[in-house]
Length: 600
Image 1: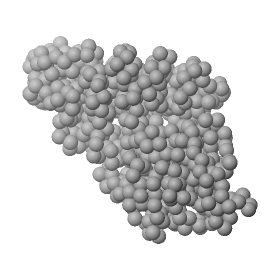
Image 2: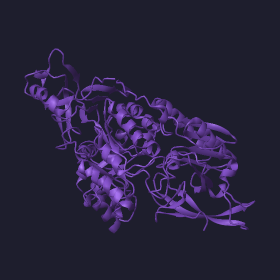
Image 3: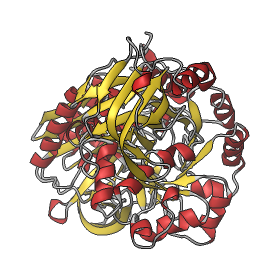
Image 4: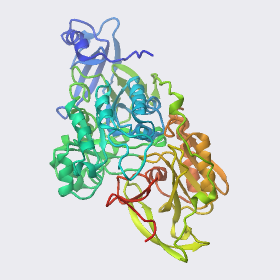
């Protein structure tokens, strides 16, 4: 499908841009009488016109009426602010449960015109071929979706088994693809710190291609390990949770990416490095990391992050820099996008208020793509093959006995290691609890808010189940919740209080081909089918958000009161963020990066 706003390269467009700017030819589009928000000079200039040609800004001046010809489209800004289209510097499309096309359709009305995406979720399921599918659909969209080649599948070698592994050869190959902008977040930070040859080879392949290496340092230790990680080449990091983290990163020459996703609230605690400590804001960037479909449909995307930063005390113009020009500069695209200046892609928002940023009209590559919240463009779909839709392999029908946890022989009680969920943050707590033993089996304890967790192998059909305990969801009664979204290995995670329902939930996910299923009192009460890689749906965002909304309600009916508990659920197998996680190989102590016993 040919897009009407497919962008020409600068060399192709330059003769016409110059002719329009010089007044020799009419523009394709002129926006008249607006307030020009200039993120290069950090100022607002009233009474300006913008001329667009070939999908790029040709000129910005107080009067460009000479650029209007018989075929020129004219938009009256009527004194509104003309703001650069918003950029998301670090995100995972799969977290929205949507394909790139449907994700784009969901965020364009919110003013997002550029995304830098790391599809490492699908890489763990389908390998390089899955990354290629995401890359190809991304390039079909009417906005800019750049792809970072995933770096870590598995994220922690030796501690988990993924569907596929990413190699340095894969990374080198991907660096030649047109939409690859750099290397995805380097989650194996112990590997970088230890100078692991495979990790360094991936970084070297990226730097040889003169592209950006994404970082992920999920440790509170800002001493020698952090210095070693910075020396290893990552150019940014989004895992900071406090002011000291943000400051440490920029002092070491990295960009501090501050995230506000569906469950990550890390802007308020870090932006004080700029608002109170006065550090140079051009080294700070805003991003979402993970947003589920409900957040996108009901709350927004980068416009939500921007507003939050302003509410946290950031000057609106500084906050805009953090989600436009700072991002473009970081990825080497300052001459291509991120500002309303000549030669750049004509991506902009018309808004009547700078602080609250109501998104009234969105223009991408010189074409109006959304107005007053309504999408006005097509977002083309890839023809996803059957190989991408048949990825859940259990190997057998599971029964309650697969979820039994044998206690040491003769024990009446056990001291178990428990994964402790932390609301609104990615890290977990390593807890312990005394649990009762009945008929030789360790039991969950609803009074202590301890449920059972199981990781079910789903890539190779081994029938393997790893069992453990988790605290923090508040589940009551007989219930189970399962998901094939389980960062980053994306096996199946089932949390529950009843082994029979845990088995029924797992089997249902196998039948469904992946997704989310919630059970209560012996019956399924909510589901979200995710047939593509067990991670995404190609249904519209509103449909997926409606199903996800029912899922949240169902979790609450089972006793859960956590904010965005589904995101917490999906991260319980993320074996690169402390303190304790679960994998197909066992319980993982992420403070030591080693397997540990369930019982003390």
